[in-house]
Length: 429
Image 1 (cartoon, rainbow, N blue to C red):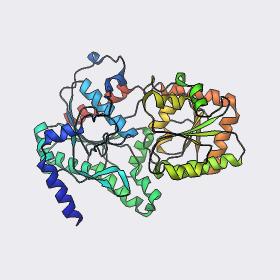
Image 2 (cartoon, one colour):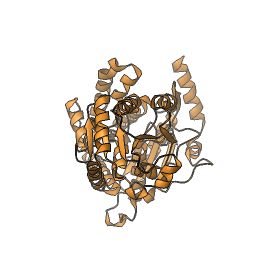
Image 3 (cartoon, rainbow, N blue to C red):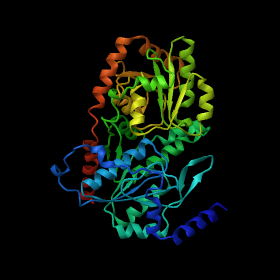
């Protein structure tokens, strides 16, 4: 039955033309155009040699239908590559209600909504129409951003055509399983992911910590670093807005603990709520501000209580204002490979309390710009929050250190590293 449904979807998909599928992924009527070039400010692209020798086919499980840190990085990469003269074509599942207008040319691949998590879509691979489009595009680099069926099909296509494959690591997918009572499958999934990476010509880890994890877990393919950047103008302490806080019912002297992210289990919602419960037991005055939306919102609201403020999904200047208007950032998640939200918080001048995990270890320097805590230890999280809230001099020192570190993360220099990785694997084939 499942196979028949997948075949039916594929036949219906192939009956449509690629041109029409591309048209269908472009800006919807209510979406504002996103000028991705603004990300790079006044960067002088003319000072760099042209990258017009690169023809990159990028495969993503979610390029723009739901906004997250991974696809924001991928969209910035595509905008940068095209600014450098490279040709890029993106293949991804799409929806009729995308979260934002994509950078570059986006081709929709067949997919279906994941049962129980309908905001996400699952690709069924590469139908003949997509393979023909790939052949016509004639890429000399194939970049896969997830070890899913789409990524595996793209890598298989690349090997047949002798095209180098670059894989980027964005998420600790194996860590998702425990949030859905499937932790017993973690080692099996981890082995499958590592086999996938070992068939690639290069793997791009987001930081040295993740690079070491991949090595230690058995990835033998060459591994390089592709970090992440942050928009220093969007995320800045200067965006702090006391009037906005007052409108939310927050007094000027109240300390605000901030959560930013998708409201889903794997972002550590239970751990966050447990930490706040423990902080209340310590009788430390505070308010909680939650930025984000997702299927876990109703449960999260009940856990946090009436004093928590839910600001919803914010973008652009509104998101930057929310970060800067808080006082300490709490992130208990274990699933990030990098932790874009932590970098945004640091650029906004917030000290962070984070779980000691791959996404935070490379950004948070313990007792310098934040505090690292044993994962899932509510009492330890609460103690760390209380320490920062109660010690104004520590908080001020950490705010300055957080901002200082974040200023080193410039998007152009970070994205140029990807161009160099592409060029290197292209030369080696």
